[in-house]
Each structure stands twice: as structure tokens, then as C-alpha cells.
Length: 281
Image 1 (cartoon, one colour):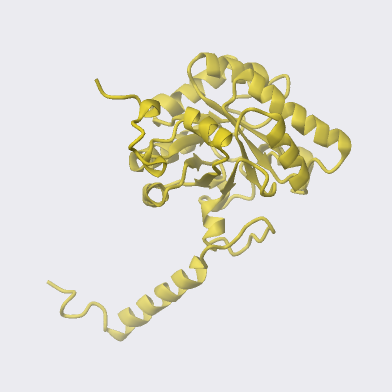
Image 2 (cartoon, one colour; image 1 turned 45 degrees about the horizontal axis):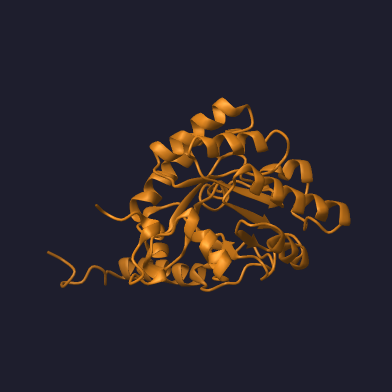
């Protein structure tokens, strides 16, 4: 009988093991940092997986970096399902988490179950992510987990709530809000969430929160004290030239490189040097 992913033989290097929700918990306990990035298409997802990324989030950030909207709010369920389907086709090792778009889990438990179920059954996602930890969200988290759907939480700055905030400023800078964010993380853990994204909070708060909860914390703009880190892939590749938050490190400058390549192609076509005889049939 084939072995389940979490009972992989010890001879399999950790970097090659299939990442599961249990594996992330093991990494937190061992002090092994979790590397996460976003993907919205097949080719990027395949490259991320081959590079050893542990968690691939099919984020509703696609509404901004893929579709050109100003916020994540316009992302629809059918659009998210499309992105999830193409990403899961490419991934073999990483844990694929699908964002639940705005208003796909706020109207009640039945609707949340139906939408999360579509992402799992039709999209083949391995977990879903929801934002918030209020009295309207926690029962939904519990029910999804009871139904066998792993849930990742999201606290701190919550992009789906941006119109209420009115700004992307750092959250948790006051004592009251800091305590509330820690309580939200604990409540999500108690509700059965396997992990939580902590976005744009002071580094000290994120470190304190990470020590306080048993589930892995994945930071974005939350300092180095979290159990892992996530960035939006087009941001860290330097593709998004209009977005320059201090928490994004550019590991490449692809906008410049791609523009240069496109320009050289145009020049070659107009000069008649492309295609060459060797590039023709």
C-alpha cells in the first residue's frame, strides 16, 4: 500500500517531501521557516514548485496584479476557480491554498461551504484562506474544518476590508488593536485553522503573536519573527513598477528586462532580421 504523504520515509529529504498542513506544523515546531509565494498561472506555479516554495497561495491579489483593479474586491468566484485550476495542474510538492474571494463566505455557512467545496473539488486546492476572525467568521471556519476543508486565516491588515479602513496603513500600532489581533489569532487556532497570515503589523507584535499560538504564522510586512513569509510574486520579481512598499524585496527587476526584450524584438521585426533563415522552415 502506498504511504501517505505525512508518513514519508525518513530517507526522503525534507526539501522533497510533499507539503501538507501537518508538515507546516512540524516546521514551526522544528524552527524551520516556511517560504510562501503567490501564483495565478501554470508556468509561474511550476517554477515556484520546482524552486522549493512550500506554500503557493492562489491569491485574490490576482484582481490587482493580474486583472489591473485597484483592490482585491472585484475578484469573482468563477475567476478564482479558473486561477486555482491552472495552478494546481502545475504543482507537485507545495501546499496550494486558494483565497476565498470577497463575499463568497460572508453570507452564511452554507454558501461558504459551497464555494470552498468548489475550490477543493473542482479546483483541487488543498486549503482555503479567509480574512478576519469576528463572530461571523469563526463559526464558518469551524464548519469548514469539520467538513474536511483546511482553513488558513488572515489577520492584521485585511485587503478585503480596505474600504472600511480607508488606508493601507500598518495595523496593530495601538495597544488595544494589538491585543485584538493576538486574540484573533488565538481564536482562529481554537476554531481549527491550520495557519494564519499576519499582514502589515509591527514586527514586535508579530513575534509575540507567533509565540502565543500553536499554528504557523506567515508574515507579509510583519517582520522576521513569523514562522514563514509570503510575498506577491509579481512584486518580488519587480514586475509591478507602481507598487513600492518597504516590506517588498526585489529579487529581480523583470519589468526592465522584459521591456528591453520586447523592444529588441520590435526592432528585429521591423529591420527584417527576425526570423532568420535558421528560424524558418
